[in-house]
Length: 281
Image (tube, rainbow, N blue to C red; front, side):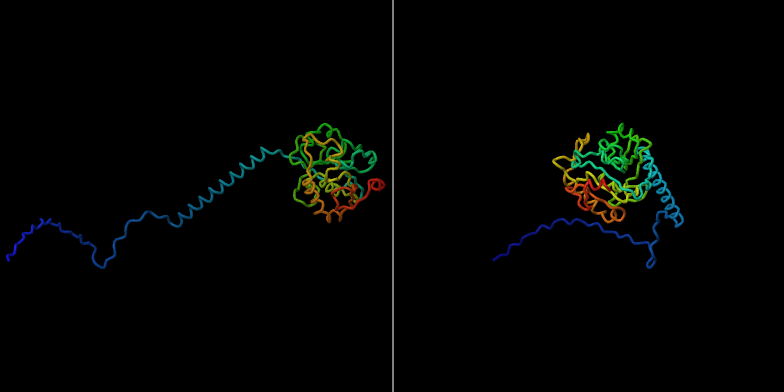
């Protein structure tokens, strides 16, 4: 048997270029030379920079506060506030609200008594001692009639317009607590509460409440024909008003005797006395 030889063709070899490694010129054992760093501020320079930043911030804050103050001054008129002195100390005061339970009542029976009329009640009660209102619109609606009155006139209206000089403008202290400071009053979210606060400031020792229904009576909210806005308080609003009286009952009772003359009123925290008995007092 013969063996056949196979001739293999070897591929051409491609020469590989030798890799040259650059030798470090750094001597062995010696640390590398430090690389150049950007300029750094000294401690004094840093402190100086921070002080400039602080001064600029203060200037910016002061300028902003000045702009805000100027804006408020230009947008809000400056009001002349007054104060209340206890000129009725120890006296009995009758406060007439607008409740519909007073429909048909003869207001002449109050002649000769200290009477605070709330809002539009002044048009029906002759010879009132004081008119009190809270809503700014009320004065705008009845400015002519109010300016013609010669009685004391008091309001904590938040945005009064063109108040006549004889109107005492008190600061509305807000909150929910009776305020006895001479220049402030807690309006209590309703003029009825504010009127009691006012009577206490005046020094009243006994207060009778007329027309404090705190509800609709016979489908009516007022004994008169209401106001130009045409809005009547809803029952849940009355309940919110009553809460003010209840929360301040202890404070009120410490300063005066207060009686509600409407037995059907939803304001039940005060003692009851008939109007007839109140008029004899």
